[in-house]
Length: 141
Ligand SMILES: [Zn+2]
Image 1 (cartoon, rainbow, N blue to C red):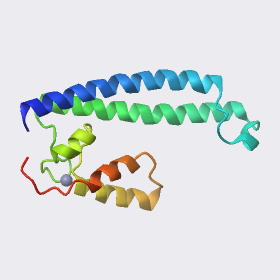
Image 2: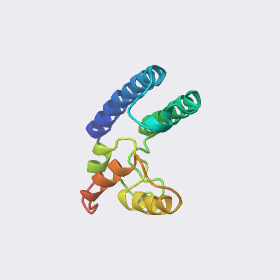
Image 3: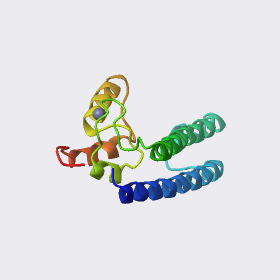
Image 4: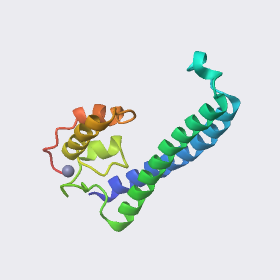
């Protein structure tokens, strides 16, 4: 892994971290102001509870992302950044550029998603799969 590449990755991770923190803040605010874009007919039923549920889902996702970003930053420091957690091969740089916090190469990620799809519907992982298509591995790095 090249030094310049690591530096770039670190920078985008730090930016991402700020972005997530800002998102958490605005999510907390907007869920308090109400979100009238969904479930209008059932909205009046236990709306207090609904509000709480939705804001918990949002912050869970943000928290998970924040954790991934932090882990990636730790791996940069430890010198293990860009190595797949599963098969220990290098993750393609293109993939890391698109997803700086990924811990899996494209093949292991696909395997994982296949498993995950059997138990529950993938939601925010759709972006990962889209990037994965353009990455056929087999280059230098
Ligand atoms: Zn792998």
